[in-house]
Image (cartoon, rainbow, N blue to C red; front, side, top):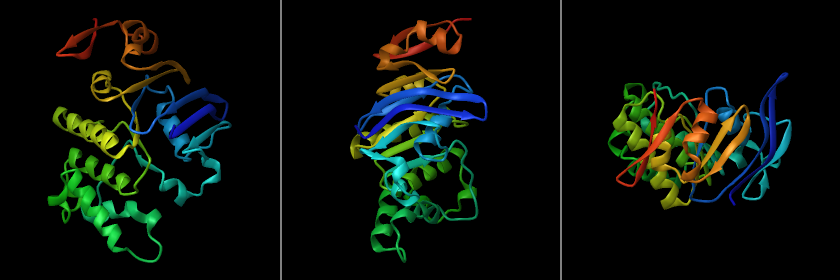
Length: 251
């Protein structure tokens, strides 16, 4: 297992957000973290990335306790794509190159430049290298942020609502990129999602949070009417369309 989370608990002051969270993730897996707003999804990603410190539990990445890794060591293992991406007066190439910071010692090397060009090409951003990020569309900017995480050469990719505020075409493209990269580069991708149908289409494993605990975990079979009702409070049924399960809310 590339990631092992065991007994993790987190609270904001007196408010318990995560309670006894325990799961494992394999290399190459795409895992969706699901649940209503406030269920603890984003908090969980931040605990894995050491942005937040759990009050209990252990998190192992490639059998290393994250508490024993400094920021640079962790950044070589984990790429993080935050919920909100903003452009600035920086070229796409430079914005992506920033992701190489954990690997840069004294100055940017030929390898840093080579990897940056390679990732830009992989995400079909080669033609945007000299464009400024504040000139990009939402979908283009989201791919730049994913590219910046990928040039870290991580073993784990954490993505917090990567399809938020994107149109349908860009939602599909971003999720397809995440899945293809996970499989081709053997990276574990953990994705906070709201759209159950996108999750079903592109994920291997599902973790459903309710009130800060794992209510259900497993393959596509856990996305069923009973669990959807329990986690979201919504009646729904599942229809298969061309072999793809589709969640259809009732009412």
